[in-house]
Length: 340
Ligand SMILES: *[C@@H]1O[C@H](CO)[C@@H](O)[C@H](O)[C@H]1NC(C)=O
Ligand SMILES: *[C@@H]1O[C@H](CO)[C@@H](O)[C@H](O)[C@H]1NC(C)=O
Ligand SMILES: *[C@@H]1O[C@H](CO)[C@@H](O)[C@H](O)[C@H]1NC(C)=O
Ligand SMILES: *[C@@H]1O[C@H](CO)[C@@H](O)[C@H](O)[C@H]1NC(C)=O
Image 1: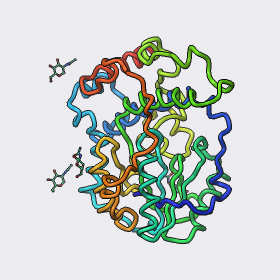
Image 2: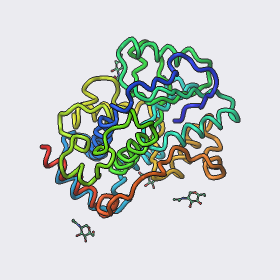
Image 3: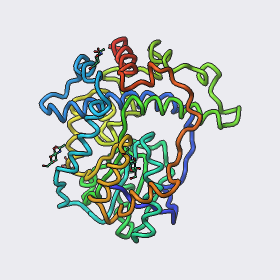
């Protein structure tokens, strides 16, 4: 599932474009929240493939749950992959594409890949493009060509929504990704945005109100940064990473998007990991894709490889933080209720 890390040649696609990332923060938050919803929906879909509709009550009851149950959807992705014999036929098994979702441990994972690529003899290409996940057709074509051009075996990581290689007449590489509890992801992203803004010089900084905005307040006041409306378009969603470049993938709670994401996971993702269960994720990766991940578990536990963790994460009110108790979901649902 994981793509190789490659620290070598930086190709034009890989150039860091820090453009106006600051302005994207609010969008990012929205996307995160939406992503949470989407993950839940995906889980629901998996349990109940006939319906893509989003049922608030169902989620409410599903949310008062043990951690395990809360993560059921995510886990079903992982466990699916344990029991599910993935069909590698028709895929380019010498290339691995980690189209990494932000705030899901991707820095850690790609660092592992980078290190392993040396031992295991493949090239890993790490992209520094963080803000171009939605590509137009010519950008997709360039991306596809670039992946296909690199000598095998090799792996890539980039924050990019799923790209359909067959649309460009090419065999698809193997895809992998890692997800996490959607609420945790939103909270993490919310504080990460602010910590990142703080590190910047005073000039480019958002105003004090934004910097000090309280998360609970944000949710309860239906602040756009913390509100996701059905049918709204959010590029911060987690779902598009699995659904793809179609505009419908960005529509919050769009049944087709969920259906497509599921299709793609089954066809192209031998492993979708879960941040909360890194051990299982790494073991599944090693077993499913030994060529790219042999030794990943050991490396993870023997080295200081966990990176990009937000040490400035502020105290989050218990109500928000207590995901297991369902408090944060109540807040979250409140937002949704207000919105719809
Ligand atoms: C959640 O579940 C626990 C035990 O299963 C129960 O005691 C509690 O009342 C439930 N909370 C809600 C809001 O349903
Ligand atoms: C995976 O397969 C094993 C053996 O068939 C079974 O015991 C286990 O419950 C399965 N896991 C899931 C999540 O279906
Ligand atoms: C990918 O493109 C091919 C060829 O255009 C098409 O048949 C297929 O349905 C597409 N798959 C996805 C997941 O978009
Ligand atoms: C993960 O594996 C490590 C190393 O074997 C172990 O120490 C740790 O307790 C495991 N974590 C969980 C949550 O199982």
